[in-house]
Length: 474
Ligand SMILES: [Zn+2]
Ligand SMILES: [Zn+2]
Ligand SMILES: [Zn+2]
Image (cartoon, rainbow, N blue to C red; front, side, top):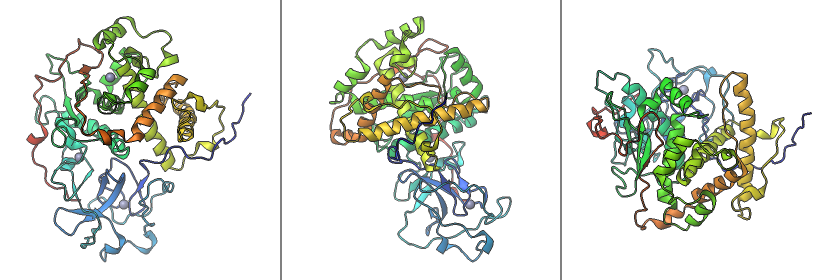
């Protein structure tokens, strides 16, 4: 028997953070990773503060760019039958164009239509220095910012050596790493979380990344977090290697983006929870973080998770230690926010799904009496319905489940707690606080014994050693 759940709510879930539904001025759908419109050749750049992928034209000064404006277009205008639709700059307000309009100019060999802006008060940008590297970074930097790199790229302390002839795929792997990292950082910025480079912007409490590769003769590079430094083994960008580890670890899901979202969760525990009034709620939901961390990981490695972990945790790994439980739930919160944003910005509404579904109720939340509790509940139920359908879609294509997890009620309370922390802005009042205690951790052993410090012997090019890429034109 099949029941149709009536549309239980016309409320929207949480407000849209990031519309992921972008269009070029020519009407062509374009995507977060694109640096050029494939239909008309217009350069594209991502403004991380506004969460917008913008079609660009050269600005009034050399090396500057600004958002494409129809009125500034030169005489070589598109033909009448290819008038571009008005550019929607507000994300999530309309569905994607499903058919590509005639291009303004052919992409192959023909220079794109170029427009040059006049001084107009519009935001002026420069391209991130990493546009011309294997990172292919399409992010924009405000022209007044003295940094050469965007807010995502300036977080890097160490990248793989791009000149080593023995490792010719370093550039390819690094590019995949950076794409996932940009997706992460864009959400963090739009959530209003503190995102500052430990290298250049906040040397005391900032964030930075080492992207390392295990030398042939060791030591094995462990992915992990330690006091604002996230280390990622770039082999995780190699699909075959990552899949082999996923299988060996019996994980349902292993991606670069998942790694980033998990590890940054440890960083934000240091920043947002440690030494704050949030600790009481953390203890209530996640437990006592003073449990011996290394011993907990080792016990999980030796004995596996407790049999009843699905009742209490979002993943088996979350059962190892309260810090891992937090980081896993944090990652899921970011998964949910980004994926729901994507669905909504393409006009996908779960209200029309013909789906048997028992929704979570308000008492599952950490603070059911919170004035915005209903909104979070709507978001959660939206997510569950969406993923139920998308899992079926994945199965219909013979693919692994889109979201191979089940949220038990206890995890719902943990997710609500994370939402309350993220939406509180509480760290803004705590800028003067002392440095929180460091977790000093790396992840569970995978194929090799844990290394307490990743990358000591790995010689890699730092950002400052990269060849100086030129400001990129179209
Ligand atoms: Zn275009
Ligand atoms: Zn960049
Ligand atoms: Zn972890």
